[in-house]
Image (cartoon, rainbow, N blue to C red):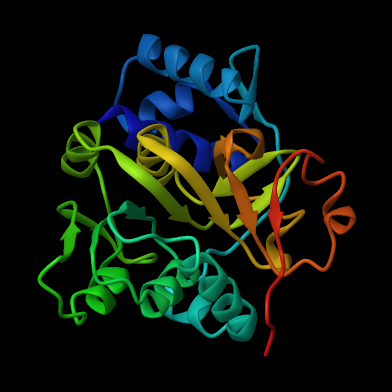
Length: 257
C-alpha cells in the first residue's frame, strides 16, 4: 500500500474510533510496527492526531459526510455562479491556468469567454465543459488516470508526476471548508494534488461561498496567507474575521442573483 493511501486510512481509522492502538493498525493494514510508528509521527506533525502510549488519539471529534459533485452542484447555486463570473474577469488571454476540482470551478469553466488560453485540470466535469469551447488557441488538458468518483477528479501518482513538470500563471480552486487560516478538503490524496498545483502557480485564487467559512474537514492543503485572493459572496471583510487574516484580499464585489 502506497504511503498516501496508508496515511489516509490511518486518519480515517483514528477519527472513527477516537483512539486506536498501534497493534490494531498493524493488523488492519498488514504493515510493520515501525511503518505505523513513522506514519503516526508524520500525522502528528500535520496536527491530525496525538500519539499516546501504544497508539494515537484523534485531534478532532467532528463527523462529516462528503457530498458528491452532483449533490454539491445544486447547493448555493446562485452564489457559486456569481463567484464564477467574478473569477472569470480575472482571466486574461494568454494565461496558463490550472482549475482544481469542485462545482464552483465547474461554473467558472462555463463562464470563461477568453479565446486564447491554456487550461489544465484534473476535474472531469470541468474538462467536459471546457472541451465544448471551440477555438484554435483555446487548449484544454485533462491530467490523471485514477478517478475519485465522489469528486469526479483525478488523483494519484500519474496526476502528481504531470504536475511536477508544469507551471501556471493562475490557479483557481475551491475547498470544503476554511477555519483557523487552513483551507480544507476531504482526503489526503486530493489535498496533495491541490498542494502541488498551488506550488506551481504564480497567482492563487480560492473560490468559496460563505457557507464554507468556519467549517472543518478531513485535512488542510494550504493556508490563506499564501493565496493571492479569496473570491466570495461575503458582504464585508469584517464578516470573515477572525476566520480570514485582515491582509488577505477579499474579492466580494459580486452581482448576486
